[in-house]
Image (cartoon, rainbow, N blue to C red; front, side):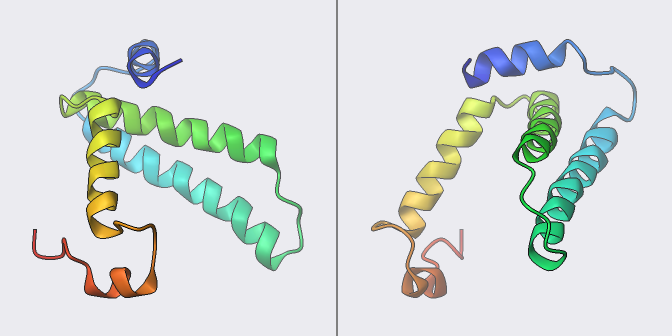
Length: 108
């Protein structure tokens, strides 16, 4: 499945109401919090990483991201391309602490 197919299929379960952008924004924050909680439990509580649970929660994050993108008239593909272009500019040779500090794109 590619981004476009996912975005089209995920829209089938989106609720069309007046506050959808607020719902999606709060929803993605909540789901990201659930991912963070799984990581917290692994690091600080000695739990093993529950890969199946992480996959489900990241799927929920992706669903909300897709709905935010669609509401804004954006495709997940163009978002991914823009992000990679930004990262290539910021870290032309891969991540380095030096490039992170100088942030060539900080004034854009």
